[in-house]
Amino acid sequence: MRFTLSEEQQMIQDMTRKFAKEKLIPVAAEIDKKGEFPTEIIKELGELGLLGVYVPAEYGGSDMDVVSYAIAMEEISRGCASTGVIMSVNNSLVCDPLLKFANEEQKNKYLKPLASGEKLGCFALTEPNAGTDAIAQKTTAVKEGEYYTINGSKNFITNAPQADYAIVFAVTDKTPVKKSRGISAFIVDMKTEGVSIGKIENKLGIKGASSASIIFDDVKVHESDLLAQEGMGFKIAMATLDGGRIGIAAQALGISRAALEEAADYSKERKQFGQSIASFQAIQFMLADMATRVEASRLLIRESAYLKDQKDPHFGTISAMAKLYAAETSGFVTSKAIQIFGGYGYTKDYPAERHFRDARITEIYEGTSEVQRMVISRAVLRD
Ligand SMILES: Cc1cc2nc3c(=O)[nH]c(=O)nc-3n(C[C@H](O)[C@H](O)[C@H](O)COP(=O)(O)OP(=O)(O)OC[C@H]3O[C@@H](n4cnc5c(N)ncnc54)[C@H](O)[C@@H]3O)c2cc1C
Image (cartoon, rainbow, N blue to C red):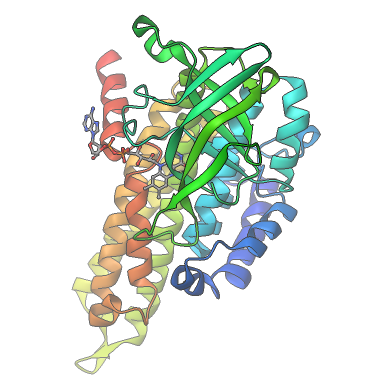
């Protein structure tokens, strides 16, 4: 595995770091305060090729590797965690399964505009009674002639109100013995009659990214929009979430970096007892622990991205480790950052409290930390 970046990886790091510095950091607090979807910024991400980073150019993407994607996700999330998750969903949860499982016609029709940023996507797996237990899907898709009729509802779906297309999971065979093999995946145009947006969540953090429920009321989907074959839905969802962990781990890393860099700067400026607080060993040791965990997170993320690029079968376990570690690190680092800012860290005058709120979700979505521990321990006990 390479520890130095290739020319192309260095280029995307420089580009996204510059973009975060100039376009995201100055507005991130405002995005959080207003809780508004950053439409213009997402348009710019599309123009920069950041909405389909590792999709081949023939399908509208930037033709880079997964390591480049992880680098870009870290930098964008360092600037604005809300923007980071919007980008992650389109790349990891929408373009990725289309790249892997869609047929040529579907790739041309859907992947091209999604990867190029012309359209935005969402991934609709979770339901009110099917969270961690994703097999417990209640949404159904019943076939009659050339069309499936979808009925049911999904909740917590990131990008749902803005999305043009959704990857939707639904039960096509209710026979109990089928279980996960009774679930199928569909590409649904969000403008289709019968699709509506329900409750938009008022969240603790990542307030610029919308999470909403989607209601499907007799939604007709043509059989040509079935992804892969009937019964493949659960396999598609799990394979997608394996890769999605890299995006969320990198989002967590970006948030950690923001908290660390800002806490280090503040510690040099803030004076108590006639000297900067950075001169106290207590503060130095906090910064040392934060920096060490940030670096370790990055190593796990780069390794998992590299393994995904190599199509290595161990990638799923390592990506679970990367997400678990980077997410828990972001909780640790953002909490310590507030400690270093003292009382000011607890106010909205400084971004430390926003990083703390934004970090929290990374332990929950795309597989909670408990789920990551299950994935990892299963591999440990199998080997
Ligand atoms: C802001 C936000 C954005 C989201 N975006 C999307 C999206 O775009 N698409 C989508 O499909 N979903 C999305 N989700 C849903 C998210 O993936 C789920 O919230 C998550 O998988 C957990 O499901 P749950 O909330 O139902 O919790 P539950 O499954 O009810 O879990 C509650 C607790 O029990 C634990 N638990 C559950 N089962 C076990 C077990 N077997 N062993 C040990 N512990 C267990 C969990 O780890 C957790 O601590 C989003 C959620 C949020 C909050």
